Image (cartoon, rainbow, N blue to C red; front, top):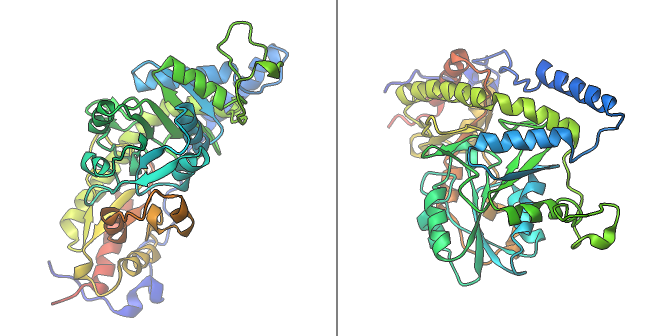
Length: 409
């Protein structure tokens, strides 16, 4: 492939004109439907002569819709943040203190904090080659006799091989937690993520494909006993399932726990957002298939991640062949961003890189596959309002930067 020769002063980062001068399309995830839902909430509580709070009408509607969406039955509780959902999920398993929990090497600090603050030890597994997700071989390689659970992250909207991981865990009597925060609605072999493990956690903050407003989360399980513990650990140890429970009598509470409720207004927003999730997934997948095709056919330096109809894309990793460019990947990606394209030049969620985490990890195991994929990729940011024009601008920006940094021999 022949590239047009681009001079340094033509790059936007060095003062040249941008490929795209207009801002990328805003998402505007919440609109009239959500506003009307809040108005309906006010009317409902006014009719009942009550002030709205939590664990009431709209949370029940929301969690019932959430369960219905997952298509496997079960139980769900809405909580105040995604990190809270992870904390409660780990707590509800009631593992022996100091248990080892195998987890993913590329994730948000909330995943690790949920393990550590429950008194357990994170054991990092590597990712599969060229993937942000762990695989069965990588998890099995980190097994030891102290491992009591596996916390699997479905990164970037793509399902990890959770079915085989759960099969292996079952053989060893090990519990499985799914972190679905970046993968609402994603599927594996026709089943939605979150229904494979013993318990699962979802973030519903405003940037996720499905949200409940500024912050929020959901904890889900198919096990009634785990659900009871979820409810207790998310609300000050209350055994709300017991007959004659009096919430104004702390003598009946089971153990120390925080109040991590989601409020009724957020639940009302979540009902509307959940109704749009499949449409959002479809539009995002269509956009990324268009973008992927353009990059695959027009770029020699960049390779898009795979995309399928089972995904629920959150961001989109683009892999860079750094042997073909005369700069570091991050410099290359930063130059693309300078052309008006919304990207993250370097994803800083490689767990092993965080200085503060080292003293909490089980050992100094280096996740070399994860490090490689992070160092050789950048992430395209997008939303369901992106069109072919945004895909065209993105690939033109990539081609322009390749024209300057590509090694010609």
